[in-house]
Image (cartoon, rainbow, N blue to C red):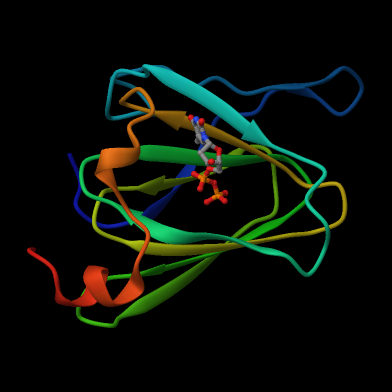
Length: 134
Ligand code: TYD
C-alpha cells in the first residue's frame, strides 16, 4: 500500500440532469479491504478535530457534503494540507500521520477504514508521536 497521503478521484457516474453516484471498491479505488465505516457530522465551524495519529490504521476520507481541510504531518515535520471540496474526491491516509481536520458548515466526513476501532493503535500525544518509534 502507498505510504504517503494522497487524493483519490472517484468516477462520477451520471449527469447534471439525473445527479451522480460515486463508488469505492476494494482493489479499485481503495487499496485495502474495508472493515469499518464511520461518519462525523454537525461539527461546529471553527472546531479542529483529529489531533492524533494511528500506528496501523489505513483510511480513506471523503467529504460527502461540504468541505474538509485536512492537514497531515509526518514525523519529520513535513505537513501537507488537502482540501476535500467535492464528494467525488477522497484522501488516502496511511498510518504515521498526525492529522488535523476542519469542517465547513454542514460538512459530513465519511471514513472507510481497514481495521475495527482499537484505541490501542491511536497516538493521542503529539510529543509521543514526534519522539516515538517509526
Ligand atoms: P476520534 O477518533 O478521536 O475522533 P476525532 O479525531 O475526529 O475527534 O473519536 C472520537 C470518539 O469516538 C472517541 O471517544 C472514540 C470514539 N470512536 C469509537 O468509539 N469508534 C470509532 O470507530 C471511532 C472512529 C471513534
